[in-house]
Image (cartoon, rainbow, N blue to C red; front, side):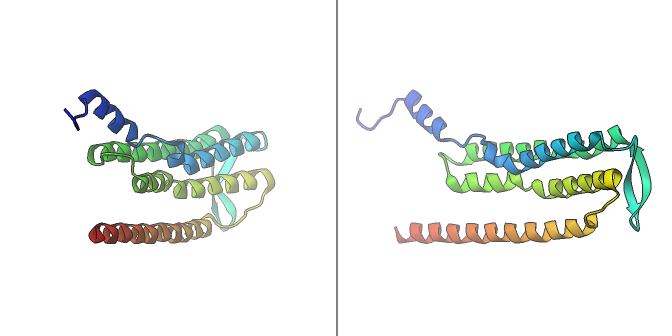
Length: 180
């Protein structure tokens, strides 16, 4: 019986090599959520009971209770972290069905997929900071729409770089497999 591996040991080695959840898959969204929570706690006592949250020509146009505005700004942050976790978890489950063992390419893709939700989170965190700064000190950093455009352009460039790297690596793997 040379070359036959018992079923139990074969399953152990294969299952040990499968991709599992790693915090790096949602590191950026979790960090922005933590920063947002710290901002909310830091500014809470500085905010008036009614907080201006929408502005027209730099002047307040809409007002909301300070507790409600913090909830409206933090709940989407939590949901985006959960979405990043779900995206990564779904990718992990799919990779377990289609890939026999640990694959560093899949880990990189899962990291990008789980962390991509950080782009809207950064915009939300900036909007939160802008609202807090205006209500506490009557200053605006820059228009939120301008910040959003900057984040989207930089995010597109970074994703483009990752996409080009992935294409180059896949072409390298394809050419190596053809040579063999």
